[in-house]
Image 1 (cartoon, rainbow, N blue to C red):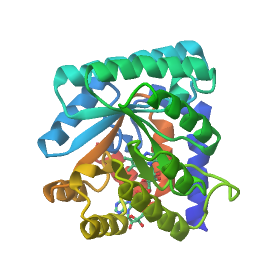
Image 2: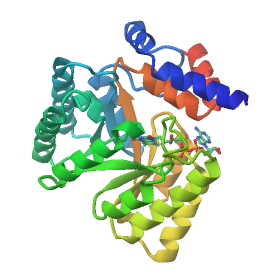
Image 3: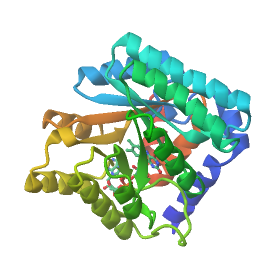
Length: 304
Ligand code: FDA
């Protein structure tokens, strides 16, 4: 009951434009620096270098919420291009994650598509890869439509499928051959479109992971759940699936020992590193996911 209440409060806060706007001026607060690698690309590159030194690869995400003008979307596009250039210049082992709403998906889908093409041209020049994060259900179909169109021209792009959605298995089947990140799902969705019980979400998570792996497609399993990770490592061993066909992914600041252990065991472990001054919504969604993260954040507040 208290868990559901706190989850809803954090999810509500994550959607507040006023709070997001205010937080941009505060600098990283409330322990957010534990899970967001600073406000600049330089701080993100520093975090990537340090993780690369420990045998982990990375993906960076320049945080940005509530983009409502073409100017903001163009600025976000330029920032993605610049980030890809900085990754290449610094020689780190890292790709890029982004959200289509940052690039103008809600403003004009053609405009967003063209922004993506500019980013993917830059990524291709650097032989790098771009992952389109999946947002809430209202953007799901648009994201998949745009991805499929981009895939006709570019191989260096993939997206994310959320196992809480009833449609997830069909989407994974439709996207055979596309590099997918599979997750449980981070937004509040209605029972009309998404499983509400954790057990069902977990069960469907394993179903879609197995489906994508067995189809021979490159699969990123993004979770902090050790039970799921154990099931995946058992499954790949049983089926003789090569470690080159998949990777594990976790968020920056979470389960650091487990990240290192998986890398030491020979698995590719990719850390998702968010950075930028628009950190509030991301931070609230992480608090909503796991009430224990509140204690984690409070600890961060006092250890700064
Ligand atoms: P979950 O939160 O279900 O926890 C399961 C169990 O794992 C817990 O009961 C606990 O035992 C253990 N556990 C979890 N976290 C722990 C911790 N910090 N410390 C110790 N034990 C812990 N979502 C989305 O909608 N779109 C997207 O594009 C992405 N992208 C993305 C990228 C990456 C790299 C990750 C890791 C996640 C996402 N997500 C996402 C978020 C995802 O959908 C999901 O909300 C979170 O990962 C939380 O679910 P988990 O599978 O991690 O475990």
